[in-house]
Length: 313
Image 1: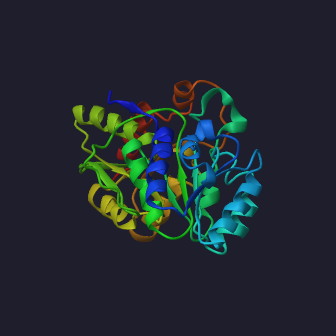
Image 2 (image 1 turned 90 degrees about the vertical axis):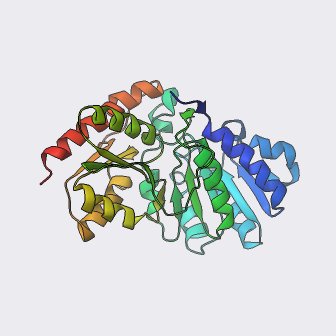
């Protein structure tokens, strides 16, 4: 297995680098800086760091005010609290005026582990994706995380970047160049396309490798920018491979699968399968146990590929 690297720690250290380059960057947290890793920024720039306490609604309002004053705020907490706990504040204070606020959340999905259902964020991409003007990114590894955070600084407007709790294997080399709104082809293939996001990208690659040994040639796309989604890559994949499997650590409704279904439905209808959490809340457990229980694994993707291939014309 490739080296495991923390996306949260990468985020914290990238923030410090960006803070040295741009004095307008300020960072806010909701009393979780040791978990979100914004404490790195707080140590180097104490005058530009604001711990808002366990009050995410207030944090969002303060971030909006700082953006209105010309600053570039990065606001961080657990994904389950933003946008969940403060959806109205995000909608009214950031989305509607289109403020330049970067929401970078950690502990997304069910891989938060033993913290339990109350801390598992499985609806956040549906919620934030419904807000006009937001750019939504779910990086696949630490290399992409650093570049996605830098991309957010280079673009004006609201961003939502979702990171997970566990360390993830590197799927990109240092020569990788993240392109906002563009899918990355991780593996070419002609029989079926697996479109994955976040923690599921490495599982998709593992499934594709197994299937290749069985004579199934899978294309694998990393769709790290969920919004705006790369419609061109989806249409091309549908046209050239004739079947698509999506894989995400999120509810089946309102996430990557829903976005891909909208694109194919409009432009290139093909059989689809969705590897995602079905209409349920997950139980508590270790991250790997939960991913296996809810089918968010290479085995789950492999089974979905076989199912969609059976329906391919």
